[in-house]
Length: 296
Image (tube, rainbow, N blue to C red; front, side, top):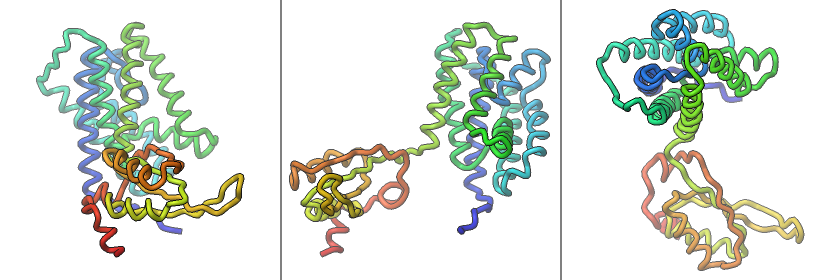
């Protein structure tokens, strides 16, 4: 079994810091400034601010410290360090942004406020999660319930968010709650988009009797690596070769032309790939034809 990497990476810490800064910016200049609530521990800090005037920068630390102490045994070394670091950075930026004289004038438009909060906060949180960070809070509670009660983390987080949002009605009205729900939806979508990565691609599966010609053309003209998978017809039980290749969206049209040219009757399945890592995506794009030239 491969041992989990528990080392601390400087890039992770930098990106977690940037993510915390963005999330805190959205919370201060969009949520707080326009009386929008939030879920999770951030929502609890907003409730405490509205009812008792407690600065979210301080309540974030006060709430998370006991949760981290309770849940430290369920976190690995890296997760524990990143959680503590993320909590401190979030509190720090909440403190900073509340003292920076910035006014984002939206003329009371709650829809724009919800959009701004969702996009900026969601991108910041997505960045935070993408590099292994967390700000503790409900994540730790969800892990404990998953460990001892077998409740999936996603379900626990959803229930906790619903509870916090319902309690938020003590300081906001139904109209602001409606826009908070819009914010929450946009926030979740942006988080998912950020976590999935910017290197979106298309996975193509091709079933054809002319698989070798198609494979050669793909490697020669697109410079993409191709995998040949052994398959079997469900009806005929005849063995067949299936082509699997991942391409950038901009190359999809050219790939279709290659397939059509070699076998108009080929079966083609196009799959959305949320993230593609490696040569041609996160590394330098190979020059077209280099694979074919090496092959020859």
